[in-house]
Length: 74
Image 1: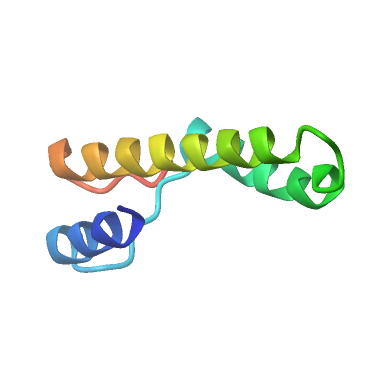
Image 2: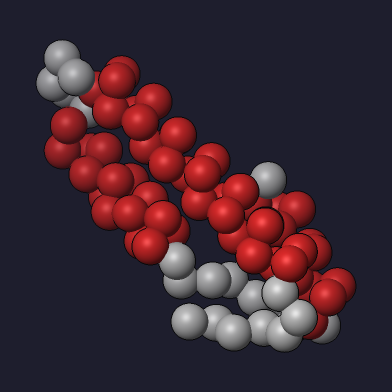
């Protein structure tokens, strides 16, 4: 979904366009925490949670690219 979002933005805006949404930032923080929690009993659940956040962030970014008229990075 992330690749599709980048492709849509590249075609629509004629440049690479990644958005800095709150969900994208939350995904970054969660991915950063994975190595610290990987040996805990909650690792599988946390990794599933990280994947869920990443999917939601990708969907939000794709939706934003599809429905906006012009690129606004922030």
